[in-house]
Image 1 (cartoon, rainbow, N blue to C red):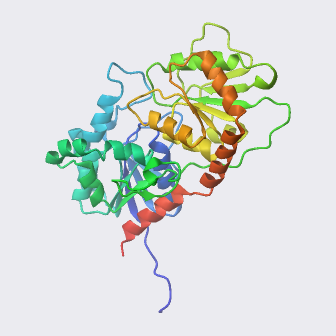
Image 2 (image 1 turned 30 degrees about the vertical axis):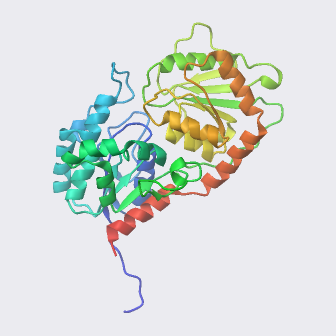
Image 3 (image 1 turned 60 degrees about the vertical axis):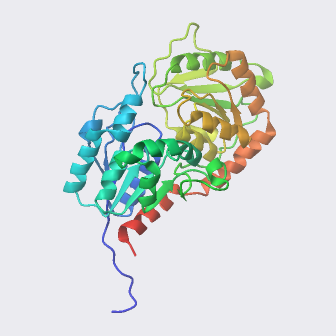
Length: 384
């Protein structure tokens, strides 16, 4: 019978990833959306965490080379770089991916932007492949788009730009309006899908109740993290009187925090709390500049105070973006309690900053990166 829509079978989609913290939210969001649409979705390479679980309907499989990777634990002199290099360029990872792709059918493969050897293996299969980024586009352009990096890796078939250009899609789940890469020319031809962070409008505030500050410094272990927590707690503990008074919830992600003094009465210390439950009531987030936490706060219309913990990561860039867009402030991670406390007061009383954050929240809540990413993967999986 003519005129009837063609019935399409579910796709088999494989995500190749690993747990480096902020890359999991967009991976899980898009994979979960595809599973809800009835597709067969596998995520390979992510080891389970006690505080997190895979999206419903998604199959999790191990890549043996990444089975012991755990960025939540304290590490040595070189931090997490050895584990990241194993994930990005390791022969063992490439071998595991090659074996998986040879044994499991796929209509589309989605590869974490860090995993260059895995992306090379995916492209070798001829299966339509997409790369999924998980930070500001400017960060990827500065790193993976760097001519020296590409020249060094080209002899190994691992030039990032050459690999990205061969992909059917380059999914970037961030906000183009605040990303410097979204303004003018960019060396990487991103598919801007919008944030995958889910948020709801702010809850009504009760007059006379001090503003609520949420502190969240990453689920990934960071050097000097405990000391930064202590100074933030001291700063917030001094904000108890008059119009300067605040309430604070400090989430540690399981990091043990030892304070020399008793915990201030206006500060609550918790291991973990679902951000989506508390953020509608929050007036300021103090964070480290992680992309996921930052975009989730902004989607809720919350301004930020950013203290970048890792200068080699995207955190300083995120802090600069927050400053440039008048969405909060950035301080050195070594800032003393007095400066932190004064900056908290300045942000909370800066109506231009709070208004800009509110407008940004409205825009981000209208985006749906999970839906847009799933749409894109369906297009490449089904083909013309």
